[in-house]
Amino acid sequence: MPRSLEGHCNGSANTAAVSETVGECSVTGGYRRPPGAGLLTAIKARIAAGPTFAVVKSGFLTPVQRLSSSEPLAAGDILATFAAARRLRVDARTGTIGKPLRGKNLALLLDGPPGGEPSVLHRAALELGARVAEVRFTDPTGSASARDEIRALARMLGHMYDAIDCATLAPATVRRIEQEACVPIYEGLGLDNHPARALADLMTLCDHGSPPASEASILFLGDPWTIRARAFLAAAREIRFKVRVRKRSRAVSSDATFVVDATRAPHWSLRAQASPLDEARRSENHRCVMQTVLLDTIVKA
Image (cartoon, rainbow, N blue to C red; front, side):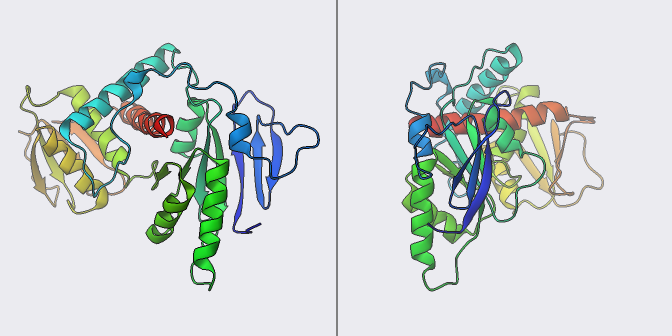
């Protein structure tokens, strides 16, 4: 058994924690191993044996199979993602969202020990009913057998989980995991530099004035060449926002519909002319965009 994995998993907050150990990977949550079952029981297969996705509607499924800064979405795909995220937002507020990912397992690969507080992605997945494991991944790159070790680890993870988030792992390692795991792979879906965050910010602007009918414009302040900025600006232009870019924030013109100040990265401030936009709405939109991606990719997988 490879010894490059260790971690723990959370299921429903209402479920008593139970521990299952796979090598050095400790899994806790609602799973219960039947008497006599071995430690290498396929967790994914056993939990998902019953019917799942009873409350998923086709309207949730949007063309976001691969949100990537190198593969920008078309305008129709962006707007479809916003529509799906807004439906999730309404359902969450009314308590009708259900648990569409019940019985599904998401692994969050970490390059260090798990933190004290669950990440935004961790919480977003739990709200959909998924079981989430924070798994410490020690990249064996540099060793003579690195490729074989990554292949074995990726295949094991693919058998255990329905999707894997690779967070801050090296891009070459992510590609190898993607090739071998045969499940959806995310490159830090909950991180600030993932396109999902850029889409959530853009969705927040659209909630206050949608182009093209409104002829809305954006003044972007800061470096336009960061990963997040490139994704944001490409998506904004795709859905017909008029975009201007300035690298400095002094002498800001107020004639733009929105001002996006990215000069204090990673924190961006969004303003509708002189008024800051609601931070709670931004966080809510970010959660809903992540959940849209999870539902779209895991259901289709």
